[in-house]
Image (cartoon, rainbow, N blue to C red; front, side, top):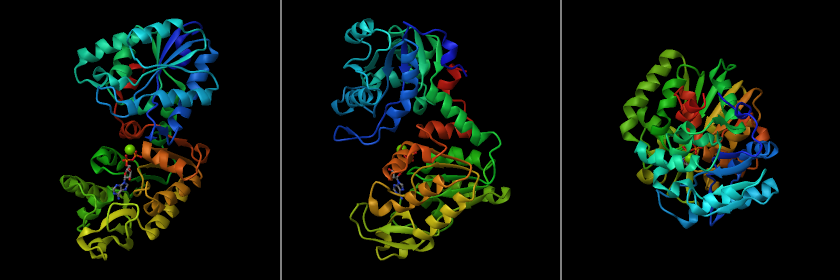
Length: 400
Ligand code: ADP
Ligand code: MG
């Protein structure tokens, strides 16, 4: 993979830096600035080399329209604070205003352009549309640096198309992410445990398929666990369920048994009356979710305390752990304990402990853990999963 040193001297050159500054926002405020912090290493290195830096990123899903609440303004502000330099910002991406400000940049300057996805061409399925937008982006700079790990698995104008138009390389973050995730693929030290949670089974099935060939144990929690429990014949009441995935899940369960891979499902579940932070709740055995006091209306919103302890004990004893996806609806304190217990356990692993996924990363920081408590916190959820699946990631292919 080409890295910054492969780009030669950058002094006086304009660098188009595709970062992933897609941070969670609440009322216009950044609730987790992890992705902004993760971008600092590359920006600082480029500043030291005397480059002029044009940072591009998406934020949320504006679907090709200008959405005021999804402006990168607060992100540029946060970058100013973290870099301790005046980061410039223009409310434009490839138009005249952007071109003018880029032309004014001097060595070491940092400019943030407005949200790439305000332009429909960025994520268009039409290659021609994407290529035209990429050409406008490329015209702003001399070289391209791909550093948004969260988007390397996407065929998008600012990821793949632009990389074909300029000398291109990975930034420090992408290089680190790849190095860390490789530790999970190239002969991981055993026991190797993967913990999967989060909301959608269908997002994570591909990776389970592949992991059955490499892991010793798979711990499953989060919203996806109910499809597994249902596949085992349990009634999951009103919990999240993807019925169309039941056959696939059954197939995985039997393949895991054949291969000697242990798939561990929680033995108890925190069941709530409603999907709400102040809902009454009860802890019941996983086999008896429909027999809680909420009957068929009960919704499983977290793994129970016994399961959390069991998961934690297994995690602490492992040598390699990858965790993606919260164990419950951690955004609501009453249903955050399972996720917290798992996060805590990862900090105690004597070996490699990697966290992947936007919500999982936000959760560990919200609980007060720091990046240093883990071997690595990946900035890319989908990208890290696809990497572990062994898929070719389009962005990385362009800088291979
Ligand atoms: P990540 O971003 O870490 O990859 P996901 O996006 O897959 O994780 O899933 C995160 C979401 O899953 C969180 O918003 C959380 O509330 C939700 N979730 C976890 N457990 C449940 C559950 N039992 N029912 C519904 N949603 C859940
Ligand atoms: Mg998520």
